[in-house]
Image 1: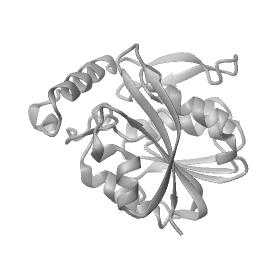
Image 2: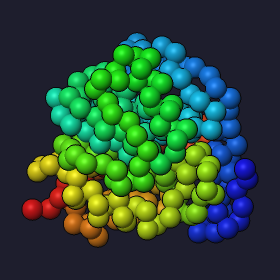
Image 3: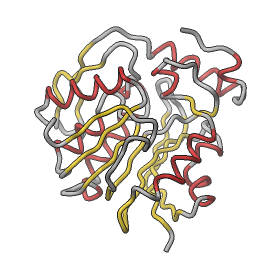
Image 4: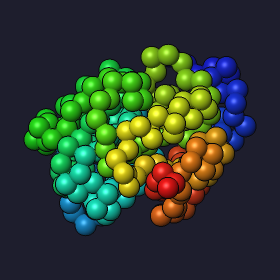
Amino acid sequence: MVLLEKNLNLMNEKQKEVVLTQWQKHQHEDFEIDFDVSGEKDMLIGFVLKKGVWNPFLASGRYHARYLFYHSDLFQEKTVIEIGSGTGLMSVIMAKYGAKNIIATDISKLAVENTKINLKKFGLEKICTVFESDLFENVKEKADLITWMIPFFSGTPPKGDTISASMIMETKVFEKFLIDAKNYLNPNGVLLIPSFSLGGDFTNPSIMGKKFGYSIKTTWTHKSINGIQQGLIHMHELKLEK
């Protein structure tokens, strides 16, 4: 599998450089990693990453995970939908730290299996249902929190490549998510979505959310100056405007 110009043609040169660098770095075999969720020794020991699934610890996934840990009021004793579960990191954290019920979905069979493996490993599979779904396609329930660690770059990922699909999405995909999410949010429910300064306007929730009738609070910002994802990373909480 390779990324071609047609996959990247909506990006500027800097965006292409970052995506290609990340894509290479995310090519890995099966392995396990110990992750300190809180930064204060709240450990996930032996978290499993399967070949072909995006590694959240290389980039902004670790910030998303830590945000959830420190903002457990968003999911405590609540029902959650996670779109694009990947390795299952976010669902594991929410299930471990107080969620009542989690529906975790991914369009990738590899990612669904990786999520199931980690939920079982940490004894959380009774709290979380995992299945394949293109966004909300197979989801039947409503939730108090919907979270998606969105692909930050506009483009067309090659079919069957879970890793590039974790970084690249067509603009219409994010628009469809924001429209459809309204039907799956309970009253006063929250969409929790990150953004990356290099990603551009079409994947920026604070811009796109307003177009589709959401109020937005940007609740956290981090300036990443090291690693393969350098720039400003934000967390946004979106609610339906009343």
